[in-house]
Length: 356
Length: 239
Figure: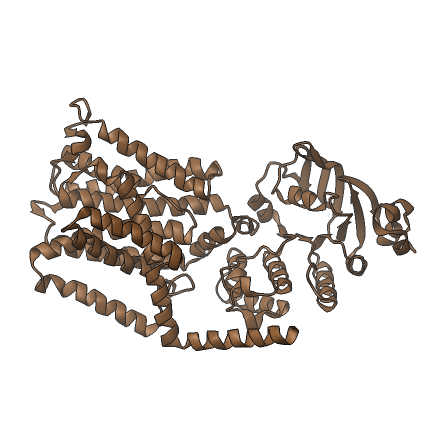
């Protein structure tokens, strides 16, 4: 199992990479000892979104399915957490609410994914259908301002959003501040390592094979629909985890966290970072979120314009992603592969000259 | 005993009848070649057999089981394997990973490692294992795809123009390889244009013309058929 942490589908291997990983992890663990509680809370907020980015990376980068539906499942789980936490009461039941809300998001993804994948929807149409479903949910929730829109004691509240749910807690102790931060770090480490193992496993092989050539993958005896559905449910479930954690962190959720601008954000993070690698997505998304939040303090419009500009720059200059490109460059320099690549190219050009 | 039976199969694409009322029987353990001029419906018939197209009418049996309604992956799991006309490998993945993906359902651990080495050596791709499959030459991609098809150890191997883009030496080697698989009991159905290659491997030949079966028999019988010579081979080939 441990061997699967490294493999052809993930950048980063060997003692140097894992030493860096441990150093970053150690830095993350001691960070609350030196930072003030406001900054620690902000970092927790950035980390919330990483799950959604990793989920999209799995679906889009590894599975070849560009889903615009990350905020759909973020919203489903976020609202589900609110409804469950309000109706089940606070305390330890919030943990159950968190887990159940992720399961609800995965079930919703399973239903939508089944109809899309078994219906043969792929390519750009996959993005169109998931975006449509996302906008339907955002508009639907926006018109639920009246008192008749409630589930048990939980009012949906239209554009003002749902509020009043308890944050995560164990007994009477709320998981907030540094404790929440450590929970986030632990969850990210678990999800990141689990995803590395998944994509480097036999299942991961079939997932990337399906991205490359679904017909050939099927002609090797794989029911590619099942692998696509698995990828979609896992990726959407991670968006759901982000949603449930977001609601518990801020104790509110509004339809604006589902709508079009929000739905575009994960695409920008993952495209800029490098959709075909988990580590690039993890690092790049964190940097973008940090930058976005820093600029938002001064001007939210400027931050959105910057995100748009970054997406354009990625498409024009580095379609595989900036962070991944930098990572590969560094890895090639460290391993000397760059020189070998140049040698290969030189040999290839000599061969062509000879043939000519 | 027939391993594959195609019974009255037709395929329409709008107004075009690509395959019309075709009956074809492929016996277990034979090398059967499907020949015919361009547009005869050979590749369409292949795709009907592996399930990439549903037939407009008719039925297909594999090992006496009606598989007409089955999806391609289910047919592959029954024991079919195909090499497509155009190289169809995972171009952005390394050669070794292409082979591993084909092998992983059937083998594991040390057995998989042994099998992948055997295949890489057999295909002459051992030195290129870390190269992206898309960086291989056309002929090497053909070989890789044949290797992936073989990795499944199928009962029936379908090869659609396996030697396209290969040199005469590679073509001859491919023919010998097919004969060696056949000697081990594998049934092989081949679509091919190269008559020298067909002569090298074929035990039985079926000629398709305008989507219909035009003739069938041994290659010598086919070559002596004046009508076949006229519509396809050219009279000079027949003598």
